Length: 313
Image 1 (spheres, one colour):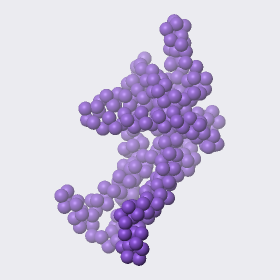
Image 2 (tube, helix red, strand yellow):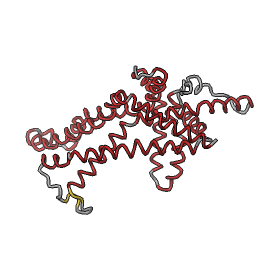
Image 3 (cartoon, one colour):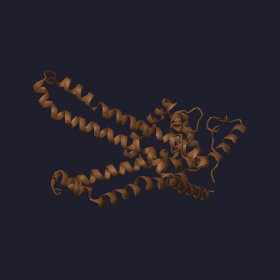
Image 4 (tube, helix red, strand yellow):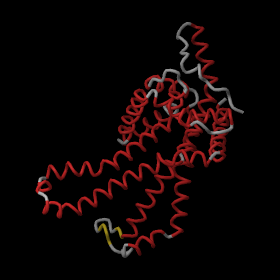
């Protein structure tokens, strides 16, 4: 039984990659604003703030208004507001993608195409309050998980709660707490196979592919162009305490930025995989619910079942 469960997880892993690569262009288009919009927002904030700082001395000499620290701070908020709006909009779209991609995947498997993305996004935005609550709960758990003593419990909870967005998406009456409970119950008895699937998916989408892109970018030699453009010596020590040169600092920033971008862009691959796994476990989960319902010990929850998808080949 365990071997068959692991085999199913491996099949889901390969299917997830297949569905992602088959519709790569569509997924890339969908993720463009959620990913690059955040980068654009940060860039706009930085550029506007930098220009404002350069102008402050001249403005303070010409206008008495800018001789007040409070006024300078207030204007700085207004200056950075456009970039902040772009950043928050893109960030919200990225969070919505955690739910919308699941619905898009279900439709893609049935129809063979990706279309009407806005309609799939509305499934999440129409239940924005519960969706935000779900993210708040997950954020609290992630903050706690940073503490070393909670690392092992955090990994265990991650596996049990890995299907929360799928449960939320396919529930007719989405509820943050019920999503956590249902995900936990669906994973019970499938912990090892789910853990293996999580490791494989994480390795490919969060480590292997981002590292590969970082390596390819380094071969292009953008760093040399950067140093030449700004007339910076790569061997110059920028952080004496760590003995970090300009080249070291640039390499760190470059790898971190590229890895983050690629990891975010690969969200569809992860969501597709977990949607397929949700579908794979759903049949057994419904069977168990029917048994407990017949025994009279627990009422069958129809919400997660009404919009259940058929098993895929």
